[in-house]
Image (cartoon, rainbow, N blue to C red; front, side, top):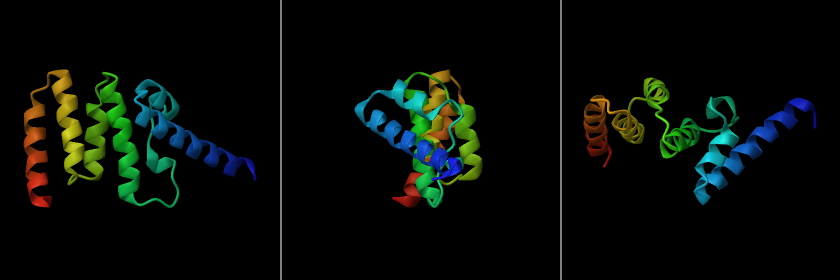
Length: 118
């Protein structure tokens, strides 16, 4: 296997390890494995947009679970995929963590999207 393929495989294995640590509840270790600028789009080849969203949302949840606001990151995700209720819920949590009044409007947007899907 050439160096480029080895690097891709290494990052894929780290993602798998991060998912494992997340499931165990070791959020700090999971975040350390993913890094501070994680973006699954740059990591995964051959995944659907929805699959990539799951990993990106997991990363945002990790930030929230260890007490780090991720409002800016979540807003960037919303620009790409506005119609995902879960991402709006993440924004609501992040804004609430910051004491940002935008939490209420994010929650309302999430509720509206949820009612249209479910």
